[in-house]
Amino acid sequence: MTRKLLLATRNQKKKKELQDILKQLEITIVTLDEIPGLPEIEEDGATFSENAIKKAVTTAAASGMPCLADDSGLVVDALNGQPGIYSARFAGEVSDDLQNNQKLQKMMAGIEDEARNARFVCVIAVSDAQGKVETVEGKCEGKIAFETSGEGGFGYDPLFIPDGFTCSFAELSPKEKNLISHRGKALQKAKPLIMELFLR
Ligand code: IMP
Image 1 (cartoon, rainbow, N blue to C red):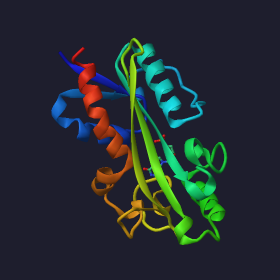
Image 2 (image 1 turned 90 degrees about the horizontal axis):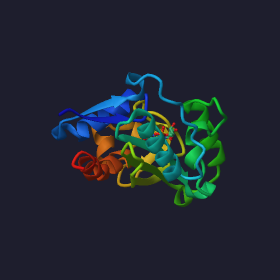
Image 3 (image 1 turned 60 degrees about the vertical axis):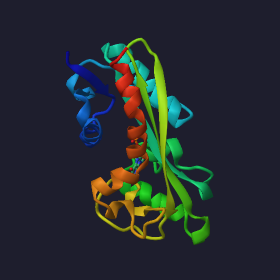
Image 4 (image 1 turned 90 degrees about the vertical axis):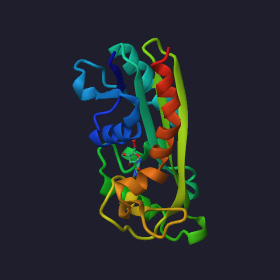
């Protein structure tokens, strides 16, 4: 029997990351692009968890397949948790990574090194087609840099210095980042939930 898990994203990098983590489990991962007719889901929850659950449950029900969804973002202490769930659209509805990073830098201007603590948070929800859903969370603590550095990654990576490092997320290889990142940690925690889905 083929075990198929639907990943509620169109992002092929996320698919590759999950495939690497689940490679011993003989699970085929499919993304939204491979299943036509699924509804677009509005991320209108008040927390990462609400958004991840909504995406996983709705997509699983609509497709009839077990589904994994994630929601993540950057939480900055000095900005009372902003940009948080609004990380993708911090500088406006159609903002890109450059604009979001510029807005963050501007809001952090004049804030001392000691007060620049931040973390990336990722919540993963795993739902079966009947709506039985569970969540796990991964975090990566660090600081907001004064200047951007590095060309890799995406989003706020050039401004985020993970604890224990002197370089930004954007200067790490994907492999190095996955080992310490919020998403990498959440995916490792999600592994037993995924295995359990297929044992039911
Ligand atoms: P998503 O929920 O994974 O799509 O992430 C939402 C937004 O959070 C992204 O558009 C980025 O702005 C930010 N973000 C999430 N994860 C990362 C990361 O690993 N590096 C940099 N930015 C991230």
